[in-house]
Amino acid sequence: MGVLNVTQDSFFDGGQFLSESSILRQVEKMLSEGADFIDVGGYSSRPGATDIPLQEEKDRTVKAISSIAKSFPGTIISIDTFRSGVAEAAVDAGASIINDIAGGNLDKKMIETVSRLKVPYVLMHLRGNPRTMSSQTQYANLLKEMIDYFHNTIHLLRQFEVKDIIIDPGFGFSKTIPQNFFILQNLEKFSLLEKPILVGLSRKSMIWKSLDIKPTEALNGTTALNTMALLRGADILRVHDVKEAREVIKLFISLSDNVNK
Image (cartoon, rainbow, N blue to C red; front, top):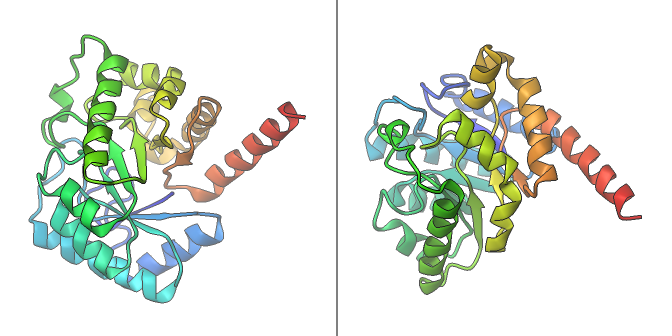
């Protein structure tokens, strides 16, 4: 899953993809490097990011998605949003997956909207919201509470007849750096939920803060953690750098094929 942030303040690539020409160049690059999905986001969810009005987020994402769908027909596009109004407008414009960092908890209409649109849903674990999540990292039993969260939300989604569900542990969201590494170490535990697992480790602070480097220098660390994630059961890698992630996947498949012989 290639990340396309059409925002001014995302932690790594904010401001790089605001014009139609820059958006299309980046999408063409990611598709040529092997992206299976393009994940379009118009609201920065990094800690401390500025809140923006719904209409501004909608305008940013719908414009980008419409252009991508027109220029690259058949591309699978996901909309990265926790707002049902943005999600619906994005699907109308050509998106076919809703990627919600909040699991429906920040918009009471989201789950009903997903049900009505009949599209796959990425369910991420988050406490609070992007402005408060950094202070909500106290857990009695981290893995149990996360699995309970997923189990309960999946049950609710099934009641709304949402069948295609992907889970995302939410690395960097309402978790400390040690908690992020603990989740990665135990990623296979989430297979109990019998849903595909998406991981978003790309250039996250757990990498560059641990190595005392900048996000721009965190590609090698991203590759290392993506490899660990695949070995522990990840099904989808959400990344800024598609070429390197595709190489990791190819090598992982070669390793798996050799082990199974």
